[in-house]
Image (cartoon, rainbow, N blue to C red; front, top):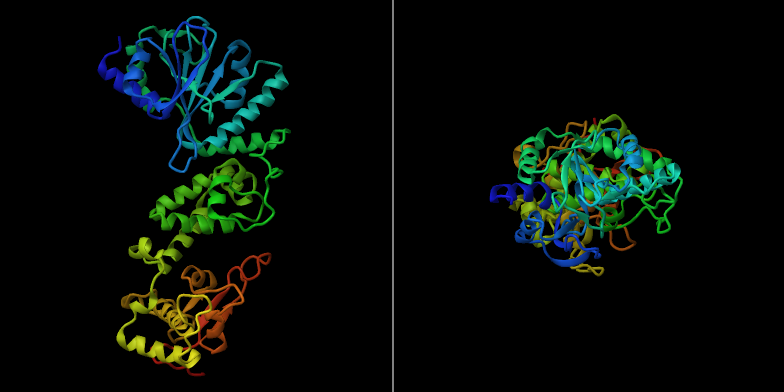
Length: 459
């Protein structure tokens, strides 16, 4: 019998890290198929399992969006005498833990490789595909990798299961309580694979495989030709070709910001996304980061996007108004009067709405107010953006206008175009940066000193 304290340790080590809603089970000693239950795997059932009353297996855990994650790779060795060496050749080292699965067939082993941080379930599929190629090439029994989506894996320390030495397979102890307590005590010292190195290795495996693996190559049957796709699509399936990473990281930053993640959480989240094998395969920047371990360029890019969102959005209004700042409400009475005069000089009292909730005048006024607050000194609650000239001026990127909900791409009413036509702003830099992406980094500058409402003096 396993005492209560040891039962709790077992839950922490082996049950809680896997999915508890739904499991597989069968009675011990009977040659029956495993049955799948959609119910919650209760602690009491696990205790019965430890008392050898039934057999239990679990599935790969999922987050709220249905994505699968795991902090362990479990390799099922039905014929270890022919599978163990190929496993070591692929994984590069001995496993952290090794278990004999039953006394009925002492050869069956489960090798546990622990990872320092969760990886997505799609990476397990890549490893399984690679082992399939290895197994066929060496003409050995198929090496199976778990946890897999939709496939349960038997838990250790069921009836006949024993803890073994990782190098020899020799049973360490027949006492379950002793084994569980010893593993728990030494857990932090057990070898764990570096996630970044593992993903890099999987990327190399994917490149070596000759099978048409939709997760590891760009030749997918469902591949989309367009570089423009929704945030949800990027989260679910990742990059499908080269040249998409910049846009993807931009919009993923938006998704993270609007979800309330902090800057560091957003960076970690996007780095996790980068480590999905299909994203490594379709981005030279990610490949370089994985191979060298230098993530600074991507981290700086993520930080830049995030801070731009901070300048554009008001977190306090995120839930009520989509996070878009209402620039007009920020101006003082005198500032609002001057901004209103400029807007009126451009549109008059036009109430035309162009299928919009606000009129031309209101949209021009909001655009001017937005430019105004960007050009304030930091001491005035602004961001102190200035040109090399001596007068106060705002230099604002096209993407910043877009995220503020001001820029309009269609042929309808475009506040930015009207401000350019009126001479309020000009294109300061157009498409600087990569010559292959013209217009990507367009920046506008303000031609008027809004505080004095006049053009700068010629020198």
